[in-house]
Image (cartoon, rainbow, N blue to C red; front, top):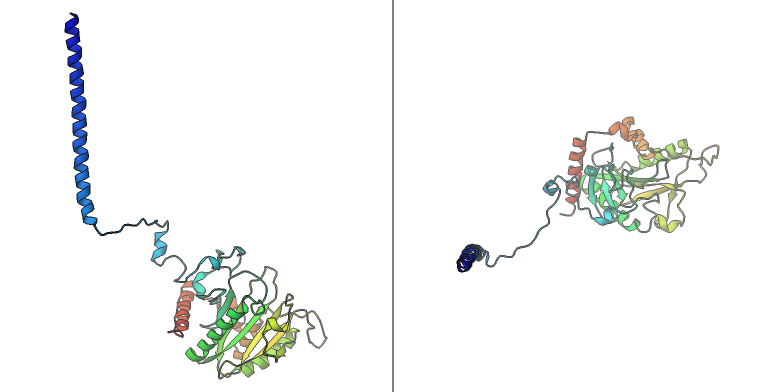
Amino acid sequence: LETAQTLAKEETEIKADSIVSGDKLETAQTLAKEETETKAYASNLNGVTLYWAKGSQKSAESNGKSGNYGLNFNNRHFPPDARTDCWFCLASPTCEKHLIVTVFDECYVAMPKGAVNEFHSLIVPVEHGGDGAFVTKKLAPEMETVKSKLRTHARTALQKDLFVFERCIQTKGGYHTHVQCIPVEAGSGPTIQSKMLEMSVRSGFQLREITSELSLNALEEDWSAGYFYVEIPLGGGDEYRRFIYRAGDAGGNEQGSSRAHVPLQFGREVLAEVLNKPEIGHWKACVVSKENEEELTASFRTSLASLSS
C-alpha cells in the first residue's frame, strides 16, 4: 500500500512538471515569434531618426485660428504689470488683437476703434504706464523710429502728410499712453495748425511751439503732470513743426485761468473742423463692424510691409 501511494504521488508530480514545461515552451515560442516580428519591422526604419513631440492642447490654434492674426508675440510682450482691464495691454482679454498691424520690441502699431480714416494708427507701448511715450527714455528711440516709418508710408504709399499727437494726461479710469498718427492731405499742415491754435485758446489752454531740435525728454526732466504734444506736417518730406502744452501751466485764455483742460478728443476735433466732418470728432461715431476692422487692418499691414520689400 505504501509503495502504491508513493508511485501515485510521483506520477502526479511528473504530470504537473509536464504541464509547467509545456506552458514555458509555449511562452518561449510566443516571445521568439514577437522578437522576430519586431526585428523585421525595425529593419524598415534603418537610417530613420525618431523624436518625441509634445502635442498641443489647442491644435486648432496652429492652423491660423489662434486670434494672433499672424503676429509674432513673445513673453516680453506680456509684461507682469499688464492690466486685465486695459484695452492696450496685450495680456488683457479686452485687447482686440485683430486691430494690431505690427509688433516691435517696445511698442506695437494698431488701428484705433473708430478710426478717422483707413490708415489712422496708434503707436502703443507694450508696458502699461501713464508716462508719456516721447519722454520715457526706454521707449523714445523706438517710438521715433516707428513714427518715422509711418510718416514715410504716408508720403510714399498714400501721397499724404502725417498728423501726429499725444495726449498724455491721466484720466479717471487710468491711462495707457499711446500716440495718434493720422494721414492728412498733403499741404494741409498750415490749415491744421491755424485751427488747432484757435481751438486750444477756445478750450482754455495755450500751445507753445518747440523751436529747439532736442527731444522732449531732453528738454525737461519732469513731465509727471502730463502734456499734450503735436507735430504739424510741413509737407514735402519729414519736416514738421512741434507744439506742446504742459498740464498745470497757465491756460493762456483771456481770464488767465490755471484750470486749463485739454479735451479727450481734441486732436480729432481739430480735424473735424478742418475737414468740416463733425462725425469724426469722436471715435464712437466712426466704429465699424469687426469684419470691416479685420479687413482694414489686413490691408494696412500689407501696405506697411511693402515698404520693406
